[in-house]
Length: 204
Image 1 (cartoon, rainbow, N blue to C red):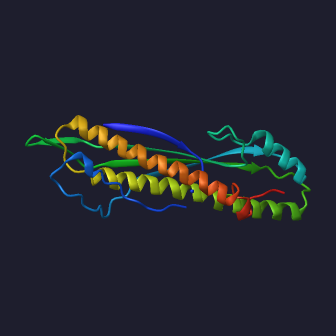
Image 2 (image 1 turned 120 degrees about the vertical axis):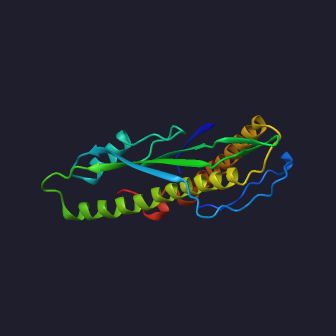
Image 3 (image 1 turned 135 degrees about the vertical axis):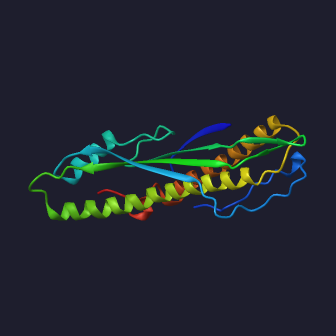
């Protein structure tokens, strides 16, 4: 059974474990050791040109990626989590087999095609800016990875259920609840960092 939830953007997290004890089971949850989600990372770029800071700022404002909140940014981290698990029915009880979780992360950054004759001071300022921008977006990646891990751990730790339909419902609800928590973490991360500005991700 596969369930896919799309989540975009923006991250510090308190790791938590969800155990749904209200579902009635006869198997105690166990901690997951040595299990990690599969993380796939991709980088994409939009090209900008210009020989002044004003040129670069204008083009990023025009070409920068748009978030799921319809807000435009200089860079963007898009991620989603998917999970799958076999279902096994034994003696009237249904449990999950090995749970697999994938976290797909896509970074979108500006790429400056530097014209000949550009002042070295501007290049240095851009270099610092991009480094700080990457630091901010890595924070989003951190949230995505933690969300994937928590979903993997929580679904694996689910106990047995009277039916596989009930198991599926609880597993999906568990994943949704975790994603909701991490969506809020992204919002709070961007609020705290002012979308990276407090980390130096501001140009010019």
